[in-house]
Image (tube, rainbow, N blue to C red; front, side):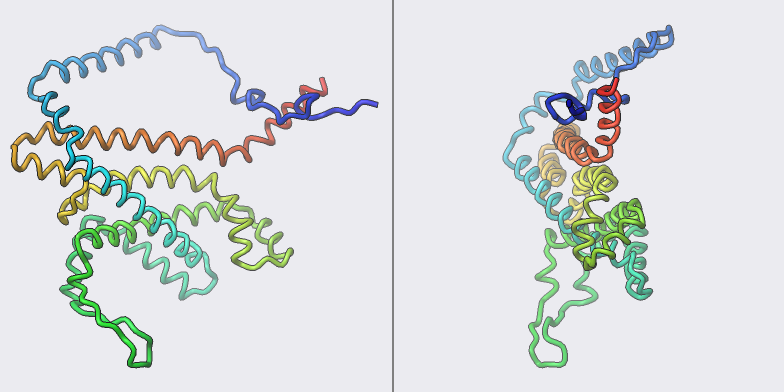
Length: 307
């Protein structure tokens, strides 16, 4: 008596090529398709020609400053700001999302107020505000309530330009991540919550093992876009004097008056980093989308094996 295996006789996992959406579709070429290609090629060729032949771009100057020490140091600080602010923003956003979905009105209201404030004010204004927070609170005391144990803190000394940049970017990013994570929670069916409760799971265990894994396909694409946005948003901290990529370029052209070449250097580095971040984002999206694609692959493989 023979048994039928799903996918193949060897029992291997069915290939994604069996999915209908992965099969190539042949569409006939029409004259307007060729016209669109010709127009696109003409536009790109024109842009490349004027970029190469226009001496005002000063490409030798661009290449000479592209890997200078100050530019590379600014690039490294940009990456550090992106990683630290994004990591802290995701953690705080997760806490805010859980608070936002709480059945306790005061907790949900506080999270809603936070999200409304930080999403409703420009991030540049927030950065400048945190840099000047010592004007409101020049000194604060950190200690144990209802005791004499406390430590005074000089806010003016503590809130350096780099600290203000991290605080401002983190708090602003947390508001957006809270809404992204909340949207991911909303994508999980009510039955999953009820099943976790019926198994006696605590709220933290349910969140860690049931809810978060199912929200990842909905959260990852938006989070990847936020990471790229954070990378470019770090250029705003140049107004605080933080020596990130844009500020490093500004410091150079303030001395040499070669504004356009240095702005091109900064733009090229931002473009390179954005393209580099897009690759792992696509890989992670494919990794977490397997669970949604696998049922279709199994159904297709089963049908073909029974024919």
